[in-house]
Image 1 (tube, rainbow, N blue to C red):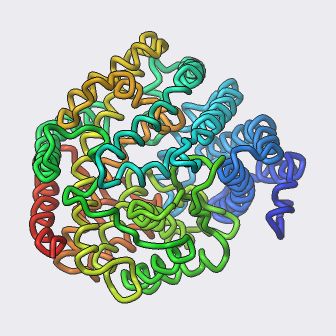
Image 2: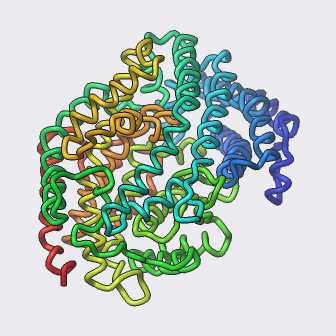
Length: 569
């Protein structure tokens, strides 16, 4: 089989469609039988691994440096030339496999997904998908260039979070206002970009013959185990259970800060006016201490992370012209993960690396699965892997050579649990807003209507924050949430996963080793089981109801109360 076999990243990046094309003819001309289908799937998998890694390497390149014109040009070439041809070929191979009537072992869920993808596929959508990806890069360029001159030094948007934790309220407010003035300066540019995103998405759904984009997207995201109504049920459960709990968190903070109301710049500081936690001095220390934590969670997981450090599979420094946020992707040829984040010395950086570390372990744990589609983990469970790790690692943040003293670790856990209680309502804002957008696409084409809709959802789920006099900053919050622009409807996964992760943590409080073992077994299933089965394997229940959420919220509040005396010690 004439599949490209690059021996270096440089060789990989030089590949073009003519290098991939010979193998496509061989794969397409093979007559499938029960005797050869496994070998054919392995060959197709190897071909897809090279195509996928080429994309992922280029994506990493344009996010680690949003001003790298050469990599951007190669990325655009990939999206314009290689991507549409590769996708068309992959769809033809999916159809070929489905037409054969063959069902390889462990391939039931991938076959279900393939049927959905074949139903969705339209050649006319390939250039639209490429355009959507390039619009995503444009979003990164706009937001990645947002810097603030603070006390004579240039800060990125994310670096200003250190200022937002300053014990002096006037300093926090000044930094917050400066930061949001800077983001508002891009309001018109982001509004213009939004109109393009929306138009491209609506056209994709129309091309595929779907009545609306949400229905199209639901199938595109392989959401077979829950419906839009289930999502809305989850919103209602959050409104009933999590909003009151988050309100209690905010009320305690308000009383301890001695202020009349919680303003946006009062969300992050310590209520006892202690300085922010300082878990590490530089990225090298962040790596070494995180490795020590992972080794205590599980020696094999620690070994995976040591491999990432040794092989340069981490880009953690925050810098100008680097895309915002964090992610973990996979380099499929060697079945190794790559973690991208923006660390600058606060506890959130530790949590982010623990989170992305959980994703990276998923890559390692699924490497044994022979076929590409078996490793395509549903996002709802992929986020269980990451969010569970944030909690499973918590007992080890204060051990020798780790980040904190016992009191500081207790404080970090409390802050994390409080942020989780806050996150449920925020997640509901983001997800409910997106349901509104795609239920009312003509209205949503006008950014002013998006502002109003975001404001309405904010009032519904976040009543405990006082944004009086900050109307422009409040209603443009949707522009500061990259998922809305770049990965539509990808946000409820975090809420469902937090529900699952809290259940995994509940089990770990009774039996840490047993919970970690179940966690690893569930990760190793990859995409060979349904969402409810994956949650069950990890020791959790896939659910949307108030009762399940109440159990998890109660646990968080109980643990906050338990650790508070130690944190104050």
